[in-house]
Image (cartoon, rainbow, N blue to C red; front, side):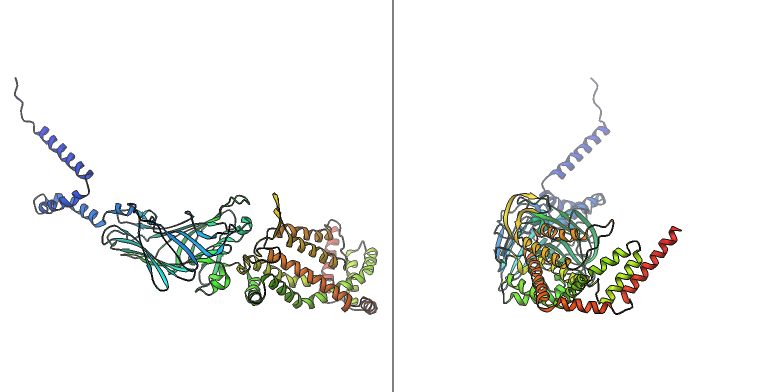
Length: 605
């Protein structure tokens, strides 16, 4: 039998396999083995093989320096922390260290519940941390230990997630016992060796805005992502569909939910942010919970070492006076109207209505404010009505001129303008009241839907002047009208109809070939208003009803007690006998028509 010989290659193979198995067991073994082997590594470091071992040593020191990241994700059997201020009901959860419930206790929604700003996971606030070895740590996944400190005027809530005894991630919330503005401080301790100094932490803030009104469609019209940027500029994302942008120099961000807002005010201007808004409504149904989803992603200011960032939040009513009392221009998040319309609301209607409503009920305050506006515009109404009477007196003469020069448009226009000029009538005067009232109309159109003071204020059958005043639920929905009948829009439409009839009846409405019948269009306006205002704020419908009613009364008073038609007619007849040169606008209009007629004839040749 042949004797086996020693095989060095086989022996070397066994040694390599043993080393590999030992290394695998070491890698898959308990983490405590790292500490047990640290002494052995130090002993061989000075040996001839120390250089070989040195690379492994550096890797283990790196792991030890980072700490046990797994401890951040270990669930803590700690109940959510709950407390309340004068204005808020609050609850914090240990996972994520954030607010799990925030309700405004002073106000109620259409279900008679405190206004839910944060509830059932509709809000996510997360800070992403970048480590030197390329990992991303999200605070939403951390488990925090809460601590509530009750001081004389504030509640302080510390949420701490620990990697080790000296390494911590901390959220510190400071809530005043009265008010809607609170502070969130985000801190890290002992994390210098872990965090990547070249990448700033990123904040993600997402909220699904809760529905708070009976009409989700109406509420959604005023639920909007708003932000202030540069020095004093304000902009918005789209009200419908989905809108996404990247904007720079942001000073504050408002998730405006019609009458309630969640506003973020950073300690310093956000250099760049990804902002997004998405409409979540599908139909006008009581099953709909949310109106829109708002999302914001931006980086915290950071250079190196530990993080210490401060953010302020406002969760409260979208009330102009309340926001104006805070630093910055947060009140600009309320859409009071652009240009002159916003100026009229801020300078005239806000102070006036605030003064009246401090002494009168809100419905009566609307009526009194309407009366003041109509009286201020009464001189314009008077001049307009006098002009309408003159146009009515001149109607037979205009018809004669039209029949005489039916084939010569330029001559017909010349004679008509000459008649108006000699009689002292201005056909454009009927447009003047409309032009003057337009800024007031649009200003109030913007004012009433966002007037927080009208919310939940009742008047007569309307239980909320900021919403529609339903007197009958239909049980089915009519396109563009709704599933209910509001009474104030009906009254406003009736008043508009009679006002239109009175004004159009005083002047001719010439029907040009190919042109639509203007009388039909004007009579359609009350019907359009009826459909449009059925789902709108009843306070606005009340204003238009009272405004048109007062205008009708004023016109009747002017007609029956101030203006004498006989004297006006005699004056016109006297003026018609006096030759008078056409000038001003009439002359320019006449000249333009002559030029147009010349060009038309030249084209025919």
